[in-house]
Amino acid sequence: MKREALMVYLYVAWKTHAKYLSWDAIGSISTRDTRSTLAQAITYLPKRKELFAEIRQWAEDLWEQGILPHYEELVPIGPFHSQICAHCFQKTGVKRQTRQKTIPYDEFRCTECERGTHADALITRHSNSARMSALVLQECLSSLNAPS
Image 1 (cartoon, rainbow, N blue to C red):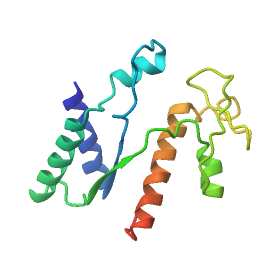
Image 2 (cartoon, rainbow, N blue to C red; image 1 turned 180 degrees about the horizontal axis):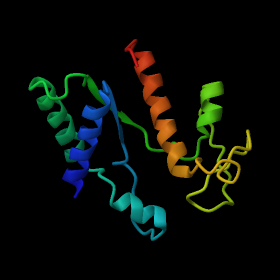
Image 3 (cartoon, rainbow, N blue to C red; image 1 turned 90 degrees about the vertical axis):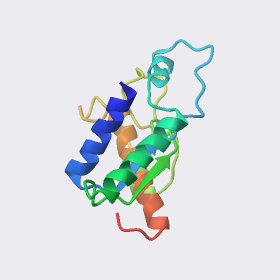
């Protein structure tokens, strides 16, 4: 199943003509002695280093064959972005954990700008984290003077 997820990811990269791909670098997160929903979700994420090496090799092979002509690089992104408000980060450039702790796990509400799931049904913890990963990737590419 994890290898099929890699294939879907590369298909999306091909379909969108993406030059850069991000990878959640969650290999360092330990779920030992925890039984929460988050721990269970992390356990099943494709986090093994071998999978990162495998998808990178697949992407390079597909690039060499001309199947993934726009691909340039797969960039590992730190996994701890679900607590940071993407809207506040985009405005300030500062990564501060502003997610309210008292709300359910899958919801998001910022303690700074008050944006959250209840005001906008599109903002969940997962969508915010994905947006943050994209912004961090963009920031990383800017530091390398690479076009985003």
